[in-house]
Amino acid sequence: MPDDARARQRAGTGAGLLLALVLGAVLLVAVPGDDSGKDACRARTVASWTTQADVTDEFARYGDDASRADDWTGGDGTHSVRLPDGRVLWLFSDTYLGQVHRPPNPAGESYAWRDTTAPLVRNSAVVMEDGRLRRTLPAPLFADPAPGQWRWPVAARVEPRSPGSSEQVVRVVLWTRTTGAYPWIYGIPTATEVATLSLPGLRPEGITRILDQQGVQDPSRRVLFGTTALTHDDDWTYVFGGDDARAAARPASNAYVARVPRGRLADPAAWRYWDGERWSIPSHMRPVLGDGGRGGRTGVGSAFTVVRDGGTYVLFTMAAGAEGLTTVTSYWACSPTGPWHGPGEDFSPPLPERRAGVAAYNPQLHPAIGTDATGGDGLVLSYDVNWLDADGGVTAQANLSRNVSLYRPRFVRLRLGPG
Image 1 (cartoon, rainbow, N blue to C red):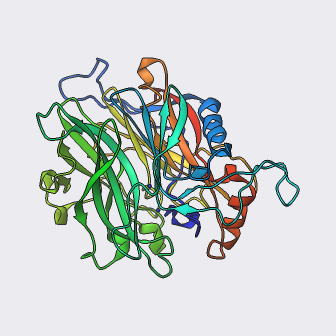
Image 2: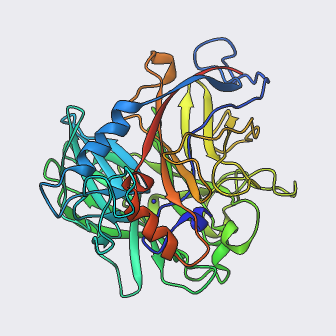
């Protein structure tokens, strides 16, 4: 799982921001043909939230387990998908392997720590069963496509191997990035790809390039898809993406959306991109949410998340124009293509350390472990934590080793209510 680029260390990171609260709009917008039922579109906001300590603690338990040297001890770019047998597959971007040592750390602080020589890989996957993290798949799970390039996994879906097939597979959307000079110290956006994993074995079977962006001369205008995805009852999967405008010092990035028939995520010819009026070809796509000339007050981070609540779509992202990476906001709409209303009020998530340099980013919802808010269980939202630095990653890497909780996802549970 990037603007959030400034939160990525040489050791790595993933993108975006988290936690969320608020949509502050109070408009009521009716879905055509339905203005009163559960599928009516209306402004939504966070009615309440609580920390989800059990999931946060489970990642701490698994990461601190020193019984193996080839498993996950920390990472970012957190995404998840529930498998047909009930297991949950967790996908991460840059990931630390190795072992974690008990406190005190070498500085005498009461933090679990890792050695600065701990292995770092560009992506990983961890399997959860019955609420417990059980094993790390061989990492990296997705090999580098070429020297100087790497892959970060983002949204994933279980779908038929081909339309109409009874056999299911896991499709994982990947961001491919290429080593670059400043300001692209965390990689130049290169392409969107889709990997296929077998079921139940989760063996990589192949990778298909969906949208190559190398022909777009300005890297900040290149769009990578897969930060979040929604599959509708109408047999369409809506895949959201964004550009890296913040790396070019623009206050906010732009959000885009594509539509793919169910079962065809790995078919580039099946993808269609919203052009402002209709579903079209890649060169015609237009943002569904961005600055719009409003002085940097609207827009998204390069990683954001979307959920459907009845007839309303709710988007959580880092706040545009905010100092550092500590603030989350939200938008709502009646369609994946917008118009999106907001931003709402800002919210700053709890962090393992309240000190300069610590940042939260990359908000991601996890339906695999939390149902829709109307079902009574709320929405589980993760956010990654990292260390901002100004010295090219040297300070960041030292701090991520000093305190391992600075590079692990944290979780909250949200309940939405009327705006």
